[in-house]
Length: 69
Image (cartoon, rainbow, N blue to C red; front, top):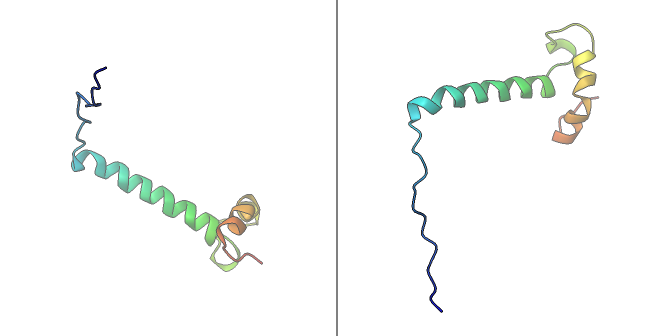
């Protein structure tokens, strides 16, 4: 019985940094925006009136360990 080791015949494509950078920046901005809404959107720092956003992300705040009350 002959054993042939697994050898990939193709290499994964190389993604240039110039093409990936805009997506990395966009992803970082979306994450920062989500972090703001989960962590700081309430009370004196609120950008939107009312408590609608606070109540929408309320359970996420507790899950991530942000103080809320």
